[in-house]
Image 1 (cartoon, rainbow, N blue to C red):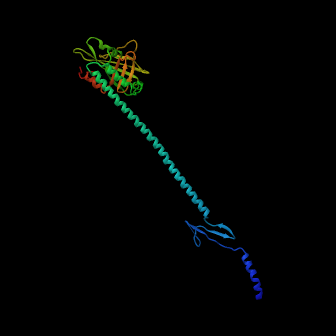
Image 2 (image 1 turned 180 degrees about the vertical axis):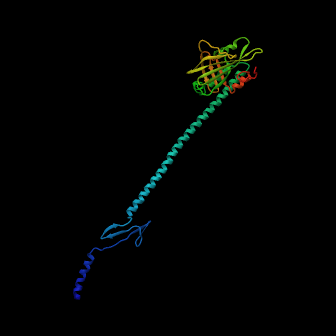
Length: 304
C-alpha cells in the first residue's frame, strides 16, 4: 500500500474505530458514607455495553436493609413509649383512688371528732344535778345533722356493739325495753346494757335491791328487725337473776324510733315520734369489768 493510500484511508479507519461500542468495566465501591473506586470490596457494578449488572450488595439493597432496620427501631421506640403511657394512666388512676380514700378518711375523722364533742356534752348535761332538757334536746338535734350509716348496718354487725344507758326520759322509757322489775318496792335500776350483733339483741339490766341484798342481773335476748327509722326487738328469752328463764306465751315485741345511731352512740325515742322521750346509749368499752364491779357476771367479786 502506497503512502497515498494510507493517507487517504486513515481518516476512514479512524471513524470506523470510533463508531464501535466500547467495552468498559466500572467498579464502584461504597463503604460507610464514602464512595471509592479502585480495590474496595463492598459494592460492585459492572457496566458492559451500557447494561449494568449487580454482582454483590447493591446500594438499593443496602438502603432497603437500612430502611427496614430504621423502621424496626422506630417501631421499638413507639412501643417503648406506649408502655410507659399506659403505666402513667394506671398510676394516675391509682393516685386518684388514693386521694379519694384519704378524703373519705379525713371526712370520717372530722365527723368522729364532732360526734365525740356532742357525746361529751350530753354526758355533762345528764351528770348535772338538775336536768336541762332544752340543752339535751339541742345536743341530740346536733347529732342528727351528722352523716351516719343506716341503723341496719349496726344491727347486722358481725362484731358485738355494746352500749350502756346514759339517759332515760323516765321510768316508762326504761321499762319499754327492759323488764320493768326495777319499779318494785326497794328496787332501782343501777345500769342497763345493750348489745347488737348479727341481727340479734341482748339487753342486760342490773337492779339494785336496797338493803343487804346482792344485785340482780336480768338478761333479755331476741332478734332485731329494722324498717326505715324504726327498730323492732323481738324478745324471746328472759333470764332473771337466779338464772331462771321466764317464758311467756308469746314473744314480746319492742318498737323504738331511731333518732341517731353509730358505733359510739344510739338515741332512741320510746314514745311517739317527736315527743322527745329519749333513751340514750353510749359505747361501753368494758362490759365484763363493769359487771365484775357490780359483783355480777361470770367473774364475780364475791364468789358466795
